[in-house]
Length: 449
Image 1 (spheres, rainbow, N blue to C red):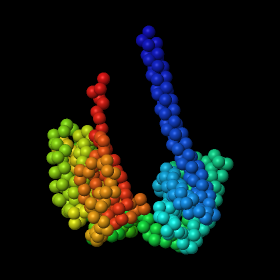
Image 2 (cartoon, rainbow, N blue to C red):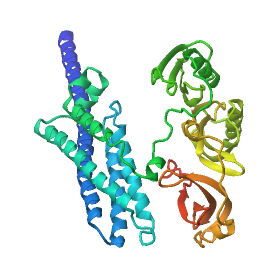
Image 3 (cartoon, rainbow, N blue to C red):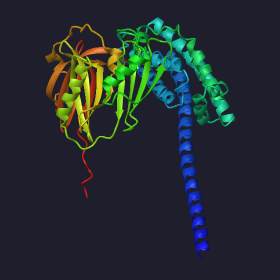
Image 4 (cartoon, helix red, strand yellow):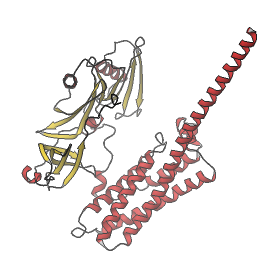
């Protein structure tokens, strides 16, 4: 009797385990299929966008009407933005593809600058038409390279998940058809480095991602560990791991991880090799019951910045998510807010520890600036604001415009209906540069029946 029951229980257990394993396999397969479908969609969208880009640039060359040329150039800019987005959705993180991305960015910037200006007063020059002709030829070559990759993908039923796996192993990178195809595209674009985009090219070069403009000397791995310990409340002991990005370069960074073996708390930090500046810092821990107000936490954040020699910063935004205070600080110079120089912080509301810190934007762009003289008075700029907006605050600010240029603006914060907006008016010519809607606090629904 007991033997029969034991066998029955065992059979049920095996069947249950088998069913659980089957369900796990199905769920895992569904996730992989979904990822593969997303990669395939992004790739075929990219190929389509490059076809469209080549056609649109060719159309601009055949146009004579300036009223038609502006929207056509704006369409070129829109297509390059979409193509850039498609590239970002492919598993190419470990594959150098920056030249192609830079090419798309420069084409987009060139077309945007031309589209927004008054072509009746300032028509395209012969040099700009020559640049368009060159871009037409170059986009055609990229189009053909991508079509070859697309043909191989469709003919051989190639999978992008295999690309992701191949990129994770150096050995696999040498014999993957898709990777070889994209390397060909990148090599083709690299030969375009001499293309003259005019002043637009200078303005859209990627930000100084290597932090080479930072002051200071190159630090050692040991120094990087010391700096990390200054930012973390963890004890001096613990398991330490340091990896180096951009090996052999002064302009890379160290990634430092410190784990307390008793509490299992882990702190992670990226530090620039040059000067030893913190790019970001994160302390992974649960935040318990709130004991500090958001205002108390902001004071903790301000004290933390001063302690680590970050000066002339204003608290710009603050918010609370569960038991964590989130703060954004921006640099100020001569009573002008410098929005490109921003630092983000997270403070635990149980004990005031800084558990998150990001200074990447600040480190890339911070410098002593020569603030330009305003071309118009603030009263004149205010007239450019929607008259229905009730202005509550006004100041000067430097922001990044749509073509990645720093511009001096008058910033107006005001209320329209139940919403709050920030309006940025160019202090040189009165152009409305940007309008931002400020997010209201999210309503709490958990008590709603």
